[in-house]
Each structure stands twice: as structure tokens, then as C-alpha cells.
Image (cartoon, rainbow, N blue to C red; front, side):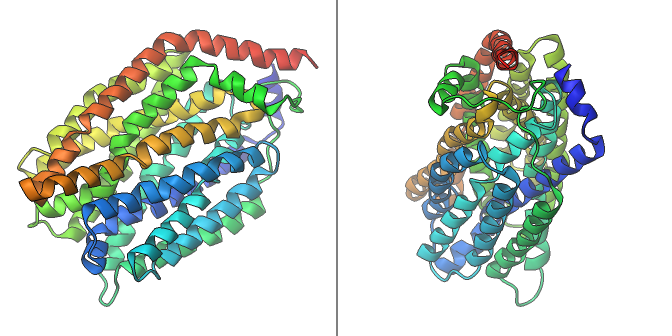
Length: 440
């Protein structure tokens, strides 16, 4: 009854406007994050960097600040205006992306990327919290699947923008950073002026004035839920490979298929992300919600089944000799890898106490980004550099990417295990939130 009453008090059109605007913000998040991997060959040639240094830029330097700053920002988001936090964060990370284009050496570029990480730490935790206050538990897989479309759409935009700008005479990688960074500042102003702060818990309890309880107690409740940890490790180890792929795929293709012009490669990857990855992300959220109506385990089993098929396709893509076949296998992987985003983010919200939903996402991302964003690119870059002398640059990178089969296997096992626990944990969470309502 609480959900129906709160839905009557808000326009469906407005709810989806907010969702789509936050999705666009998330797209800018991944434009600014992905652009480094796309421009890596140009940056390497200009600044004389090896694979290990690129891996640190895309992984450790970014993830260190992203994860550390995310916790205090989530504390603020669970207590203060989330719209303001997202708007300011967007302006900060977009500004530092533009500043990256002014870097003339490795240290300056590393500091600029650290600034991007600090800004992006304030994007998803408050956004997930707001979406959970606009959509019911049964809609969240789909809603957060739509929000997660910001990842493939942002990556697609980054590829297209890079291909277009780098094709112009007298333009270099620095100009691309500036061109993709500045529009985010404008979007931050639009967000701040057109979105209202949602009422907390409006989709879970009849009275949206959710009572406070000690922060330590709420976090303790959250971290005591086995399924929360299972989904967290599932997405973390699955994303380990995804972030490594984003950082090194253009370098790898340039070494393996030098006959294919780089602008063509960028356009193809933009299309693959905009169609295959985006399609999988959207459909994955719908599949999980529908499977979840039969059994809550479906939210974990849908990603597991998808990755059981998709991950081997990606590994095989590094060993075929045909560019067209490599792209076909990568497209299958991208489509199926999108299945874990919406369900994982949905469960992180649904299993969280209402007053620490932003914190739930922040802790989720803390682990996810230490393992995946900090580990994936850094690991692949380090292994590739270590193997280069013995195997050559092309084979070294191929071997390091092939070894990603191990973290993918761990992620799949984590999702399967979570499916055995999720129905009971979901039921207990509903009872806990109902207790908050009844206590009033």
C-alpha cells in the first residue's frame, strides 16, 4: 500500500525525467573515465609511457581517490540534499577532465586523473539512493538497468567523439580531453535547476519520514547480509576484466591489427557499446526483474548465466586471427556482460537499511573499484610490461588479457552462491523495513 500511495503523489513522467537525467550524468561519468583508454596510444607516443604507466593512470591513481572519497560523500548524501551533491560532483569531475588536456607530463596527468576520481566519487551513491526513492523494489532492477545504460552510452560517446575530433587537422589528444569535459559543467547546472530532492524511503514505508538510527547499527545491519557481499564480489571480479578491457583494448587492437585504421576501430567500438553493451544492460535489468518475480535468486542467477557464456567469448577474441571475428566475439561478450549491472545495483539498494542507501552504494563501489578499477588495468599493464621482453609487446598483452579468465570465474561463482542465499535475505530485509514503518 505504501508504494501505491507514494506513486500517486508523483508524476510518472517526472520520475522518468529524473532517471534519464541521472543516466545522462552517469554517461558523462564514463565518457570522462573511458577517454583515457581510448587516447592511450596517442598519450604513450607523446609522453613516452609504457603499458604499466597507462595501467596506473587508468587504474590505481583513479581508483585510490575514487574509493577513499566515496565514503565521506555517501555519509553526506544519506543526510543532506543529494541533488546538490551530484551536481557539484559532476562539475568537479568534468572540470578535471578538461584540465587533463593541459597536462604536459606524466605527473600532471596523474594529478588530473586523481581529480576526476574525487569528483566521480559523488556521482553514483546519491544517484542510486534517489532512484530507490522514485521506484519500488519490484521496479528497481529495470530502473537501475536504465541508469546503468550510462556506462555503454558514455563509452560509445567517448569513442565517437574521439574518432571525430582526432580526424580533424591540427587536433591532438589534449583537445579531446577539453572538448568532452566542458559540457559536463553545463549539465550540472541543468540538474541543479530542474530536479527536486526525493523523499527518503517513499517506496518502502508509508510515512517517508524515516526515523534515524545510529549509523554504526545501520552499517552493521547492511554488512551482516551475506547476499550483499555475494553480489558485491560478483560484480567486482566480473568488472575486473571489464575495466582492463576498457584500458587496453585499443592498444591491443593497434598492435594485433595494424592494418585497420584507428578511427575505424573507434567507430566500431562505439557502435558495439551503443548497441550490444547498452542492449544487454537494458535487457539484463528486465530479465532479472521478471526472473525475480518467480524467485529472488533470479537477480543473481541472471548475471551468472550471462557471464558463463560471455566471458569465454572475450578470452577467445584475443586468439582469433580475424579482426571481424574478434569484434563479433567481443560483441557477444559486451551484450552479456551488461546483464550484471542492473541486478547488482538493485540488490545493493534493496538489501540496505533505508537511511544508508547511499552508503550501501559507496561501500559497494569501494570494494568494486579497489578490486576492479584499481586492480584490472593495473594488473594487466604490469603483467604485459613484465612479459614484453620475453614475448614481444603484442603477445605479452594477449597473455595478460587471457589471464582475466581467473577473475571472471570467481565472479561467476560468487553470483551462483548468492542465488542460494538471496531469497531469505530479501525476506529478512522486507521485515526489517516493515518494522521501521510499524514502529511509527
